[in-house]
Image 1 (tube, rainbow, N blue to C red):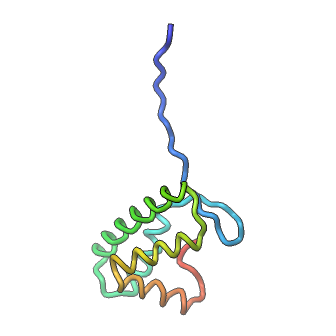
Image 2: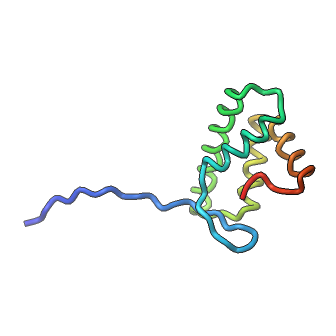
Image 3: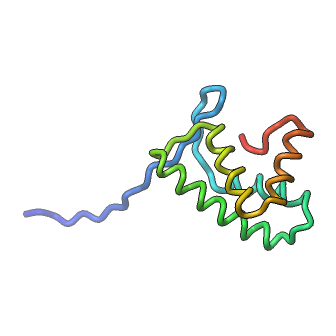
Length: 108
């Protein structure tokens, strides 16, 4: 007799390979936080920044899936910036200015 087993399939986490060689789990919340930080440097209303952030994180997640679930940090950053260029050039410029001025990245 075959028993019916109920179980949940947990999806594998998406991974980001950092420049220093470490591999960390991709988190949408990290992307949203970074976009929110960039949004504080613009005149865009927070609600619009949140909406753009949602679109970009979904776009980036699809990109990671197409890449097999793992991407390099630089690929992730480039994809975010391309998506920002498309969805909100103002946010994209704020992100880039922040990185230039602070000489540090908004992610990882």
